Amino acid sequence: MITPGYPGLNFLAETMEDVAGGKRKLIDAALRLAAARRSFAGLGLRELAREAGLNPNTFYRHFRDMEDLALTAVAEVSNELRPMLRAVRWAVARDNPGEVATRACDAFFAYAEAHPDAFFVGVCGSTGPQPALRDAVRQLLADISAEMAEDIERLALCPGLSRPVIDDLCGYVVSYLFHLSTDYLEDSAKGRRQRIQQSRQLIGWLLRGAAEQQRAQEREQSQAQPAPAPARKRKPPERRPH
Image 1: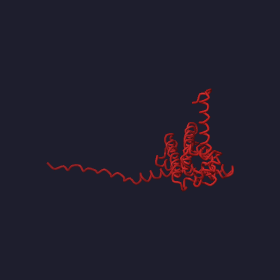
Image 2: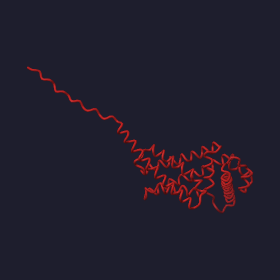
Image 3: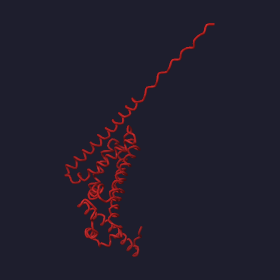
Image 4: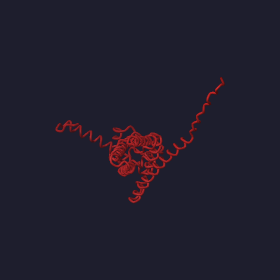
């Protein structure tokens, strides 16, 4: 913490703010440019510096290369989105457990709406030509899915489902919402509302379908077990004549 009133420390504080501000400007500028072209590939240093309003040499104060910048942007989203979703799930579960899936879905799209460039870049990057970015985005989705499954289990939101089924279900839901986010962002206000409603409906279908499938598997397993063999009646011992 910088103590006010000391010129040297105040100068240091201003310098630190400039550095942080420069990093923020570069990330935001890179996301804008990459979102417009749907890729970080081919993004030039001078083009980026011009968009950020900075000297090109400023870039290397903060990042090794463009890949480092892209991974930093993904990490920022991870550090914000994951705790936010968990907080929503736990807060809603206290009062309205049946609304957790709906409210978490709403929160996900609200975050995407607040960070559209990051989502355009992330969705394209998840299947794009840059392996490091592709792996980072996929890892982010895997982390969100794993935390979602853990919360569902700990909060006992789906008591009839086994953990492997919950893991699969969360993977499907997270992947679906993530890839739908770009269509959501490009849609009208009415279209966005419809997509949220469709997503809620789909999650409900998946939950009910998974529960029914597990019950069916349990019935099949119980029917497949061989019935216990009937107990043999022991013959009474023969009485020999005296």
